[in-house]
Image 1: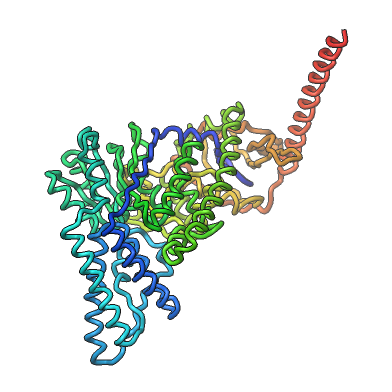
Image 2: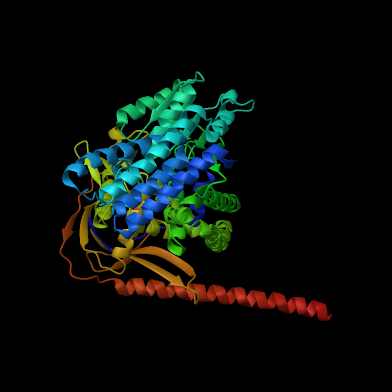
Length: 609
C-alpha cells in the first residue's frame, strides 16, 4: 500500500534544558592568568617599536594604504609574542625595504604595494597566516628620502632587539620555564601540555628553548598536511610531553587526552581564545581542564587584555557557560568595536587607555546582567516538568532510521543556499566547511544551537565507512543539521509543501496531511505545540492518526516522488483541533481557579473563626 503525506510545517524542537545539560557534561575548566612585567630593557624595546608602529600606521592611514597599516599592527602583535618574533619580523621588513631602495634608485620611485584583505576576517586560519606573511613587508608609495629614514629606524630597532635576543633573559620565557620546570611545575607532575602561540617564529624559538632542557616536543603549524598533523598528534600522545601549535596548525585537531594548555601569547580575538581551549575542553575530555594565559601587565595591550579576561572569567564562573568568550567577542563588536580595533586604539592613543577599559567594562557589565537573566530563565525551564515534551523528545532520540545521507544532503543543500561554502572529497561523501559566516553563528545562538567558533572547521560524511575522530557521521543530533532544520523552518513558515507518495506496509491507502498547531497566552508564552495528522480513506472518511505513527516504520528503502495536488483539504480539521485544545485549556484553568478560590475561602474562614 502507499501513503501520500502532505506536511505544512514540521519543527524539530530544542529545549534550553538539553543545551544546559550538554554544557554541564563538559568537565570543569579552570583558567589562570599569569601576569608578568617586562624588564626595563624589554620595556625600552616595547616603547621604541610601539612608537615606530604608531608613526607608520598613521602615515599609512593618511595615505589610504590599508595594507601597510595592517602590517604595522601585525608587528605590534609580534612584539607581544616574543623578542624572537619581533626581531625576525623587523629583519624581514628591513631586507624588503633595502631591496626596494635598490630598485627605487634606478626608477626614482617606489611602487605602492596593496594586499587585499577585505576577506581577512572571513578567511580560514591557514589563509590568515599566509596573508600575514605576505603583508608583513608592505610599504607606502613614498619617496627615497622617507624610505631611507625608515631603513635607519629599522636598523636601530634590529640592533637593540638583537642585543636582547642574544644577551637578555626574556621575562615571559622565565614565567613559562617556572610553570613547566619549577618545583610544582606541570612537567614535574607528569602532565601533557599544549602550548599555543600566534607566531611561527615564536613556536620555533620555544622548540629550541625546550629542547635545551632535554624535552622533546611535537608541533603543528598551518602548512602541515593532515597526515603530518596526525603523526604529530600521535607523537604527542605517546612520546612527547609538550605540543607546540599555532592557531592555524591547531585547527581541526582533537586532544582530549591532554588537559593542560598554555597561551604563550593572547590573540586579539576572544573567539580564537575559546577555539584554542576547545582543542582540549571538548566532549570526551574526562579530566578537569587547566588553562594558563601569559600576559605582560605593563604594556598597553596587556592592560586591556587583563581588564577583558578578568571580567570574562568571572562571568564564566558565575554563569557556568564556557562559550562566554565567543559570545562576548561578538557583543563587544556590536556595542563598542571589535577587540583588534580596541587594541589598536590603546596602542595609538595611550591617553585614551582608561576610557577604552571603561567602555569594555560597561559593555561586559550590561551583558553580564542580561546573561544572568537568561541563565535564570533557563534554569527555571529545566526545573519545569514537561511530560508531552519529554515524550516527543523520547521519540526524536529514537529516530535513527533515516539514512545518514539524507541528513548530510539536507544540511549541505540548506547551508549552500545561505552562502556557506561546502567543499567535498571522496567522491562527494566527505565534506568540509572551513568557516561559518557570522550571520549563521548569530542565527544558531538565537535558537540555542551550539556551533563551533568562527575559526573552526567542520568535517562530516554521509557514509559510516568514512567516519573517524576527525570526520563526523552526519546524524539528526549534529549541530549543522539542527541549524539547517531551523533555517528551513523559517523559510517554509506557513508554506504549503507538495504531496509525496511513500510506500509503507499498512492495510489501506491513505491521504495524510500534517499540521503543526500551537497556542500561546496573552504574554506570548507557549502553552501548547504539537504536530497533528489527519488522513482521508478511499471512502472519504476522515480520521486522526496518532502523532507518532511515522516512527514505527523504517524509511531506509522508502521511495518518494511528487504527486500533483493543488491544495490542502483537511485544514478545517486542524483548526477544529486547535479550538478543542483551547477549550481544554480554558476548562483546565477555570478548574484550577475554582480550586484556588475554594482554598482561599477556607483559609479566610478559618482565620475569622
